[in-house]
Length: 547
Ligand code: OXD
Ligand code: MN
Image 1 (spheres, rainbow, N blue to C red):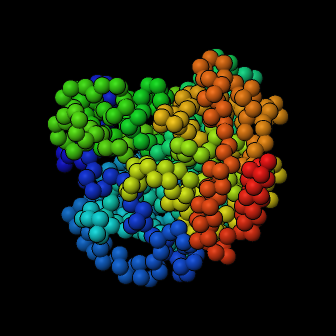
Image 2: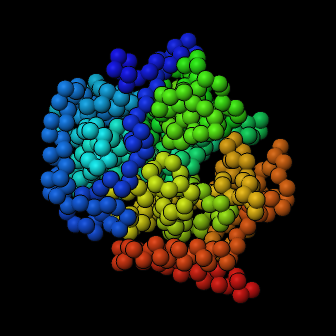
Image 3: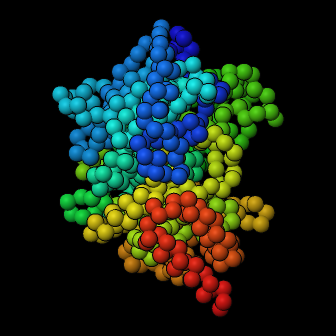
């Protein structure tokens, strides 16, 4: 890879075994418009997925693979998603003509001998065929065949399109398997919150792409001096099963972090800054004169002599030096925050599920749902302002249930039904919360400092679970009373706090309209319990505004 410049060597003194990869400039993010769920019946893919009939998809895509790998090296990559000895892990085999993909899979999954050993003579694996093709978006397809558990991807070398274990297998194909087998494959980080007694409570949280999952999972707690610490189990995907004791137990199917670089620094994520100083692949970041990786938001002023992500001399004022969706790929075990239990084969018991998104206006800092069914409704009504993680306009509000809109491998109406069904199978279903770190004031300034301070919100959740914290009832759920949040050491005015926690009935009535419009897409595949929750919310809003 060094020889053919797939990899550029970074400063081996300060960044040992770190390399920079520059992708084709038309191939820098997931392409949702070229991603297909290929089921026999269109309704089984549902209204939120692009659909092709399996036979049509194969007729269209197979010719693109003809001769595509000629003159290239073909890599056969057996890999395990999940800890090597976990009964919940699954095996995939990816065939690819990209050395970058093979090297990245080595970080992001347990690959090679360990996977072959586990596979033995069984044929129980998800095959994935990948080729860079000619990298033309006109001949780019990321096709999933969930009925036969098969993935075909051509024309892109970008992470989420090309590392087939991640979004394609661990979310799209796995979500289908999970419904068949009564478990859950979710776009969730997993963290452990340690309290002063040393007890660790595990939580899983779903946020749309590039909304801070990695930073939250790896947070350095602002309440560390009070004995609250955060441990990382995973930053992007959770596979959750019902354990023998009726609790929901989560494993992280991945072995590494494929994180968004811009905005990452010693304040926003000191743990990952430590982790990425060795054995890391950087993609589409800028490079300093001393051959170190650099991106916007790493420090306040760009150093002179930067090379941009295209490999050209960079000058300030023009475009960003690093691509906004530039990434680091780093083994999870390199983070100082990694939990000593992150590879526990039985997974970790989940006490809270958290949904969240970027909402400049609407949603309060945190609220708690009334029960599982209401919590599923809260997840189903999630929305967020878009980011650079996928191609398309940035900053528009899009509905993104459970942060799974781009990743659910089947009809989302049925997916809500699966969530509801899982709740009734759990002895003690986790509490369900919603958070919004991104609320802004009238001048557009963030109201909440975020990052390590978010532990204060996690602590409130823990206190709710343990019956210690107060909450005020609102039509959307329970919000903290100002005094129930642990705010010592943080300078935040009472007015700001009120603004952060406010639930404005008129705004929520407007939101309700948007939700109704979105739900109408699902027709009779929308579960009755979701309609019921929607009606109940509407009634509570009317009751409040007529007071
Ligand atoms: C990711 C994404 O890369 O969600 O994790 O886009
Ligand atoms: Mn993700």
